Amino acid sequence: MSDCCQSSNAATKAIRSFWLMGLLNNSPWVLMLAVATNISAGGVALVFLANQVPGLLVKLSAPYWFHLISYKTRILMASIAMSIACFLVGCGGLFRDELAEEGGGEELSDKSRQQWGLALELFGVSFVSFSCSLGEASLLALAGKFDSVILPGLTSVDSKMNVKELNAAGLSMSKSPRIPRRRRLASLAEGGDATNNSTMQQNNDDAESIFAEESDLNGNSNEMNPEENNDGKLMKQGGIQGRRSITAYASGTGLAGVVGYGYKALLSDLFGWGLSATIWSAGLFAFVYFFIFLRGLHKLEQSVQQGEGRDGSMNGMTESSQLVNSRNEDDAASSALEMTYTEEIHDNRISELETMARTNASNPTPFERFRLVLSLWRYTIPLFTVYASEYMLQAGVWSAMGFPVTSASARAQFYHYSNWTYQAGVFLSRSSGNLCTASLQILWLMPLLQMVNLYFFWMNSMHHFWDNFGLLLLCFFAGLLGGGVYVQGFSRINADMPVELREFAIASASVADSLGILTADILSLFIQSCIYKENHLEGAVVQCPY
Image (cartoon, rainbow, N blue to C red; front, side):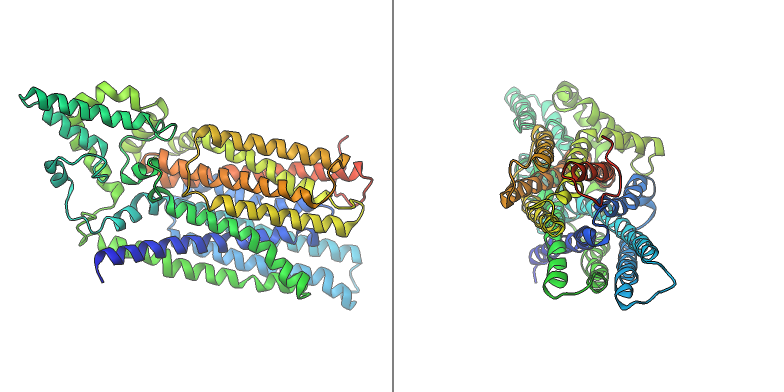
């Protein structure tokens, strides 16, 4: 088989693996949300909290220890935690419900049995939170690495000309995307020393065209690092190269929402399985999860690293290391032109990030890591806001709605249907990352629309001016907004960041959605309580503050 076919097959295998990893990483997490009303009908947000706090701690601390532990070890940890979670939640359900039906455990009162069973279930849910967040932060960063380094190297394996040959051939940037822009500027600067005035003018025109390209991309390139390699270029041109892995992973996590609720509906509602049997059966996900990583992503990453020394297209190093090593030799030749146009293509934020990447890419200090995390605010604020809004809908508002609202079974039915419809919207929008690129303005608009959606549902839950299943259309819309911000936010980070910082930036930014969900879970306890109070319902686990 030719090198070209081998590289194509490897890229396809990587995309497929990321999709499956996203599906398996999030399915147990969603399953815990699907059975939240079985665990604590009057305090759904308690389950949401247990499903979020440990994961938030993982993501908050990730920038300071992820670089010390390999991807393989992290995924193994996530797989083990997933298995423990399914075992504990199943045991809690067995202890609380099934033993009570059999009349066992007479030494414990019914109330004590309920409390111990609930505690064991929530403890198990916390392991799912740890597993999902560790896996998500790791796989998103790995997807950024594949999009930035590995897949571009694989797709260009059939190219036999190196950078110097391309410069000698005088090819333009659009025809030789593997040449960094700075190197192209260097070749133009060398041309400027020629005595032929027409050649000099042509070189200047070409230099201007480079920066014209930068300014014509309506928000995609304003924040792009002009030194990034071909994946960033492809990203800005709307191609799929710069985000295939991230979109595949996001699409898998989107389908996990549908699978999680569908899994519960199939086994529990259709086949009549109890909570314990349903959750225990999901323990199989953990084994398949780690197996796919080993046979897919890990094996591919290892084969690429082992083949770098003999693969001419890689030149014995990764794409990012090529970029770093080429900068010093490019700086002197390109400085004259760069000084002229630098204000047109840099903003202060990117310049600071580039400085950090050059001077401390190998071992940045904790303070520098913290500064980088803060610098991601234009991506993390939309992620935080959209997740806070949509999880207040799920845990607070939708859990207190039904037709009629006075029926517990009707509330449980709407909770499942609304969340299932929401997850369908998430899957669709997370799978659309290859179709379009959202500007920062659109990225910020979507969370605002989600806040409007939250306000509408909250008012409707108390005043009942739209009291039928037609509301599921807006639940689907909520999923579209949440999934859109997710895939577009991380895709923009991967495109906008200097290549040396992409893995770190993506892993660090993933804390924003966890913070949003945690905030929503706490507030949802009181939102659900106040809606219960307004509709004269009992069973809330906290008291409405007004």
